[in-house]
Amino acid sequence: MPKGFLLTLDTNFQGKGSQQNIVFTDHQFIVNLGVTKSFFSEQLSVVLKGHDIFHGQTMDIKVYNDRLNIYQFSRWDTRELELTVRYKFNTAKNRYKETRAGQGEINRM
Image 1 (cartoon, one colour):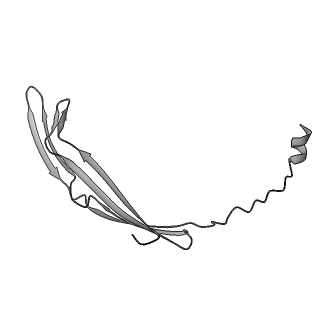
Image 2 (image 1 turned 90 degrees about the vertical axis):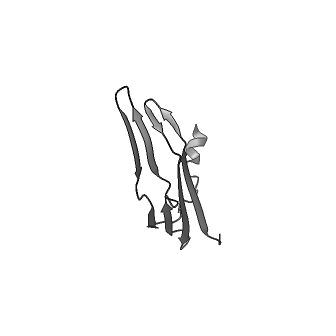
Image 3 (image 1 turned 90 degrees about the horizontal axis):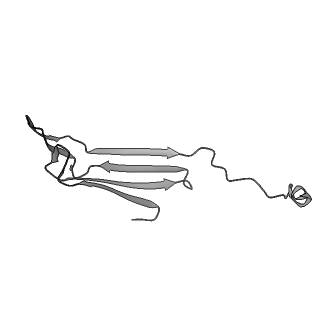
């Protein structure tokens, strides 16, 4: 990446398996990718992030009990593009200067 950019990669994986009376019949793999750039001594930052870029979020389950079996497959359009712009107001540096004003009190104790 060029200087001053920050690249982020978030992933989430859920494998096949069962929990109580629910069977997850397919893997789920979600990938989010983003890039951040700061300007004006980090007072302004711009973030561009893509969510679920490989369209991996699905729900493929079987729910069962002694009288009923339900199979559900759902695929939503969960892909998103997010743009965030942040500006930090009043970011003056700390103006405190050490004066040792309380040193007399410390010495008195």
